[in-house]
Image 1: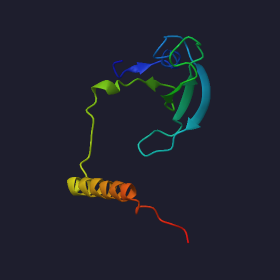
Image 2: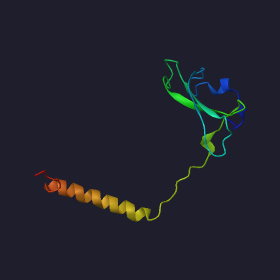
Image 3: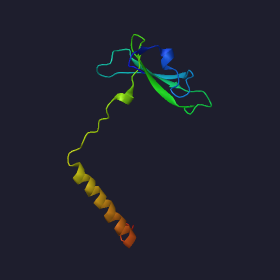
Image 4: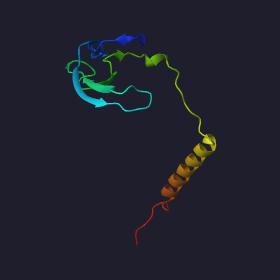
Length: 113
């Protein structure tokens, strides 16, 4: 995949077995910076011996009928660091440890009545 323009028939080919998939539901896309008339078509693999049998994948079809492929494997993964992440993480771990200790002692359960 190079990020170029492909035909819808090419995009319908199952990424696992290489056989054409079956068109399913088509959903209009309404998002900022997406051309009006763009839709997402879900395609299902119907090859019984394929690992992706009965699995769908989305294909974004633009208003002019074009489909652009994209290779996500080259994108850098983005993980946002939350403020006070280490302190929050430690607080959660401490609370879980305290709960486990209470349950093992027998005083961690809330009794009704």
